[in-house]
Image 1: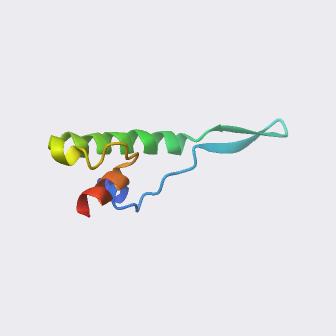
Image 2: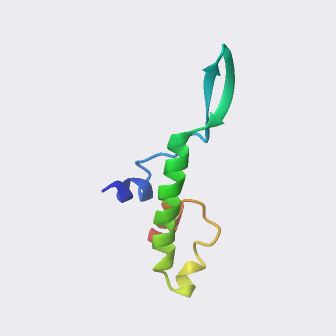
Length: 75
């Protein structure tokens, strides 16, 4: 499933910005793919951490992605 791709690292994190050319000049803008990835990953990370006991939650505090949380839990 798509969620497995996030937690297993198969869906990689896109760059946060992309360069576009406008009127012959390059500029960096937010990458819409990154924004969508971040939203989905945050939701998935919330689902995972929301199901953990307080004791186990301490193992994943401060981790930034669902993949990091999942990896910490399976170790």
